[in-house]
Image (cartoon, rainbow, N blue to C red; front, side, top):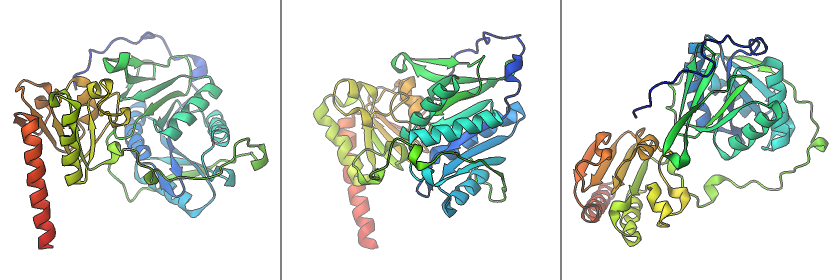
Length: 361
């Protein structure tokens, strides 16, 4: 994606304030629950590794949870994905996520070790924790970033995110407060290569909080996979439609192809605005960012907001009647034609092929 020309920092030429010099290091909060770590944590460690190397500092992971064996496994995984050291807070009250104990544990850790950058995933958990911690520490937080970089003159993190409904990108610097905080949505950053020989240093930190001191209680736990919400960000195959389909009735062609392929389906932002599809099926910079093995885009022009959310796909097949549509600039393969004719043909072809493969097996 083409980026706007770099602009000088507001504090260019000014030395780093003395009260900020004590802050060193890049941290990533690893989101782990009930024995499983969210993949966005490993994606952030990959990005954090780049930032830490540029700053010449260590990359640390923060792992919080109950004192169970799986927490040690998460610490090991953090090292395998790039962390030099792991700050571990193990306490029974951290068995399930609650804002109060996780905020208290993380803010105390930050105040003790003073990182200059703190990254979290823009998940339901991460957004809640990031906002609470930033408020408690009275520092800056940039949400839903699509790009992170370092201005070495000020040692400030340049956090780029969409604004004005996704029509523009803005870059935000937190110049006078530390740590600099940002959240990044899943699948925005690339997954780093795993290092099996890594052995991160483990630093344990206590959580001085009793269960009786916590206001909220966990009454039940419902796994995400048990609901019927779309899983666009994690699908291996995604089929999407745009205004080129002509009418909401024609969107069924997208759904039918997705069903045959065992894929997720979604659409561009205009379809959400027109009420053709729900907001949780919007694909793009202001919707879901995807990195599937195959992405089929039918009747989508491929404006910059959509490109940012999809160009991480391994293979993109674009279908559009306009040979000059922007999506052909980054698609792996392109079909110039009417999606209303091509989608049914693809559905029939895939159905026949998959049926034959099942019969042969």
